Length: 538
Image 1: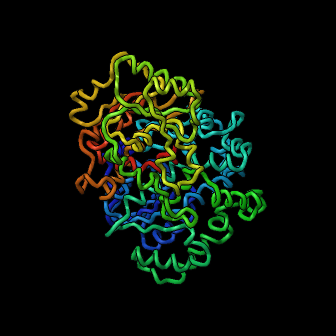
Image 2: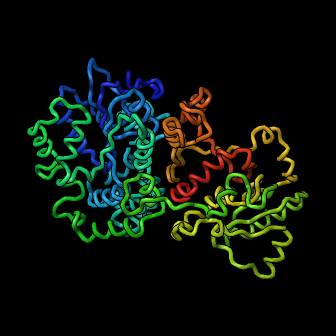
Image 3: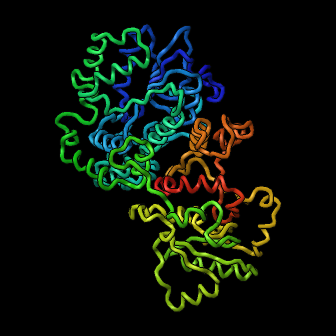
């Protein structure tokens, strides 16, 4: 069965093919109409791909319409030199449009269902990689939607995604839609990165460029770029306009239905747009800025201040040396101090820092005595952050995200990161002499996590999707990781790794790790560059 081929073994789309790629709420309907007009009038068949089907092969050029692209499949569409028309949209507009569209009950087959679907849930890569959407649907049918709704932040009473959006308030509902759409948006951004650069055979088509006033010019330009044999034909243009605007089926109804309380001109729609322009979540602001399509959020603010950013790579700034690092919060401070007391009992004499994000005030006299006994300094991450960083992003940096950010912000070069729940029975300073640390400048421990929890536990995003997306961007972008040689492709050992294949889900255990920032400078620099994104997405 051709659909059972592994994604790594599938031949990419051919050089004389045209590939149309659209994502949910970037113009899937208009992409389909444009593809049918331009492809059929040039004698090309249109093959529609709505899951992970591999490119079909015919004797001459084919038009592929790809509507559910996954990041690990990007190479199969971009690696063969085909012309690609990529429909894109500002992520903030995608979220507000999706919120209004789903809230009014559109696509009830999944928005009003208590079982999973490809629009709400994600499959482990090992189950999804067959390319057979019917086999995938059997997996989805066996998965309840409830854990995914809880993961998105839906009210506990919500049984469907429609219930979720209608019972949540405006801001909460838009934040939920942001989390639901994040995977789609990240895929769009990854494809942007992969297909960007000199000699690109990709035409990025913004949905707003297909509005009535600019449609004619955009269509003519697109037909010329495709070298369509009838690119100057006025009847071809007229046919495209009729399909896209006639009857209110595509562009005129892209955001709302006439008479709906969620229609484009309704108070709810106006409030949603105001939220995206004035508030949004840190994640959405960051995604919009990364897209290069936003008029409201054109730039990602720097993460660290000018005086702190050098420390992220080399532990510079007048410090350096070795030290113990941990993060805490008011509810965890007693446990953190108890952990440091146990650490000192092992004979460990390394200096220690307790980091927080504006949560720990001045300690009382008893707290000061405990800090003195633990020989620990308290550091506020806000002091290292750039002053232009919006205060609303601070909340996303608390909790787990404090750990990697503190590693980057500390003036220690060699860091021993400990969690407040870590129990040590011997002095961990000896770990700096471990052969693995001596070889690599890092000592990491595995933290095995299942792909999915029990029926009532939230599921986990398969890390293989994230890894494949990073690899695809790295392969196409010389600046993604500047220390690597170009052209780059995944090594055989990486392709064989269980994490890459989706067979395992080992993570790095953050309760104990060692890192020399100066010896793994490339990784530290990449972490500093991605820190704002990581904090926002978390």
